[in-house]
Amino acid sequence: MTRISLPKNSKFTNGNYYKGNNLKKLKKINVYRWDPDKKINPTVDTFEIDLDKCGQMVLDALILIKDQIDSTLTFRRSCGEGVCGSCAMNIEGQNTLACQKNIKEIKGDINIFPLTHLPVIKDLVVDLSHAFKQLEFIEPWLKTNLGEPTKNEQIQSLNERSKIDGLWECILCFCCTTSCVSYWWNGEKYLGPAALLQASRWVNDSRDQERKKRLKYIEENSNIHNCHSIMNCVNSCPKGLNPAKAIADLKKQIVTNI
Amino acid sequence: MPFTSFMRFLFGKASSITAKEKVDNYKIYANVEKNYLDKILERFDILRHKKGGLKVGQVRIDMQKTMQKHCGVFRTKEILAEGIKKIQKVSESFDEISISDKSMIFNTDLVEALELDNLIAQSKVTLTSAINRNESRGAHAREDFPERNDQDWLVHSLTWLNEDGNTEFDTRPVHLNTLTNNTQTIPPKKRVY
Image (tube, rainbow over all chains, first blue to last red):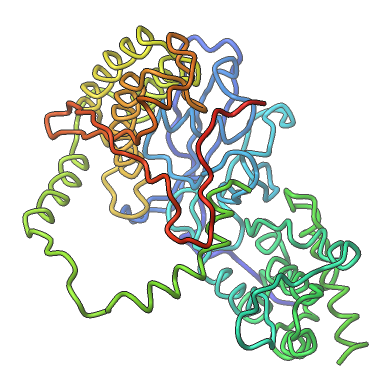
């Protein structure tokens, strides 16, 4: 049996403790910190915050910490309403969006870590370039053989349009991909749930004219059979989508349609 | 989908094709003075080494609250005038910020400071435009001038922000005709719902 141990530089220790004054509703937030400039192992800093003075989501707590306690805390954020996918991080062991996770759902301290299994750039910011390269790989745009651009719209019936429901809503936060066990093992070759969900979105689009080519391409290049329906992707998706089902559907179409 | 992104989807391709036709890659269209580059780097460097007593987030919340209170959709001259005074104070307090993140890797502390600097400038010109436009139009609802006034105010607002931090206001006429004969011009009229 293989024995696995973590690399030495990934082990974290307890870091600074930021005590608050006169906190009516105390909540402790443990945040993973790593500064690339310092050549030391990551730490977990603890911040005490007052829930009476904080918004209701985990992202609000992080912003409060950055604005009032320690402005070196680094994380990505943008819309704050679950449509941009910037604030994806691991909260209480689950990859999700900080702006969609209510503090009330968490009993006890809140543990916040970066997205799992990706190189950390700084604190909660991870390097997503490989994941985005894999998305590029499936060529996520409409392909038609029409040649010259047409002046008319390409019409879709309601029924045809409904086939991409549950697929187009993906915001590319990569919560699913980074929680996928198969992706942890074979991330170099296996495209992962986010990219494959997108592939399925274009395969099922009635306006796309290269469906068969796409399916063949996916079969040969995506290592799609590395999906063993572990369903971590479904568990973690903050938009409630089902990448596992999309992948199963792709597998079926590959078998029946090429 | 916000209207502007919708427009981008609609016209993005057409405008890029036109740009490719009309813009020559190797032609220099404007000479940028070299000291502009120095100015940009100076701004960056001064901000990066700020050591005051305030955090960026604290000044930003002051700016946000001022604009929310004094530059909302429904506004009067008095409210706006008070807002201009307050934003001046916010602008002064911006000099007191401190950047505690010294890193050059993903320094969000510094990025937020640069953004805030721009937003304070935006707040100033927004307030100046709003206090000078003595009419109501769309999301600019002056309670002291409740009616739309096409006679005097069918014009674009122009505001300059000078280097000393003060603003100047002027107007520019609006093009009321389409550029081709194919499309009829629609004369402006009051919106009634």
